[in-house]
Length: 344
Image 1 (cartoon, rainbow, N blue to C red):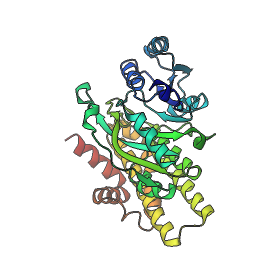
Image 2 (image 1 turned 45 degrees about the vertical axis):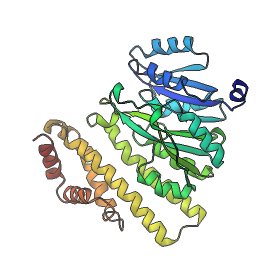
Image 3 (image 1 turned 45 degrees about the horizontal axis):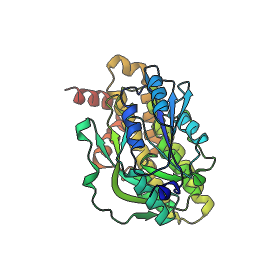
């Protein structure tokens, strides 16, 4: 049995961490307890100011397969890129430092990627906030056949429908090659990585197995008050749209009607991102909203521009059509009303 295990290819696990002293150890233990061996674990300490560095050094002493990279708070994209540069595995995956893996996660993803002969295998995930909410492996008795996607199909049925996460996926290292995460972006960088990767891959397989535990961190980026970094989610979808249609023009496969439908779908997501950002601005105090007025103005200008894209407004959910329509007509009133209703 041990001989069979040792013949399996090395899988690299990249774990970026910033100020994760309270949760890094349990994340790493969940990786070390994987039924799949061998594994290379690369922890990238991105300028933590708490006790994360000490935890990293302790883990490095405890486990022979751990490598530590120290950085100067350059952001999660730069941290993941640093990990990619040190990857030795034939396959690789990403795990955020406050998340967990169920013991059989990597083994199932490896089995899927080998059986389908595709470049990426993904699995489902569950969310948790307390230790007692973490499920056991015993709840997964069987497994359905994987869903198979061409790159174009995964764009439409995966990324544009919410499966835009880089984690919970196993990649062939050769398929990633020299591609890296776009640095300087803090919200939406996962999605852009996948969009950039699509032209390079043969396809993606997705299994229903929920083996990745996503921690709903109350201090996470999406739960913090507005800062200019929230504009990144708008920027990322603008870049993604340009990338998607650059690819479509190069391939020349999509018909004009299909292109129009795809453009309206992407632009509807972009409009939703603008309104999510406007909602964050609305939650600020009156004084703070005035200080961030330039960003609410940018949001309004983008709504005025993007709402003209045929089919984009109709592609929004009913609630977002109401929100977008009011913000388009009376942006100041919308921000006040949104703030008032949230704090009523």
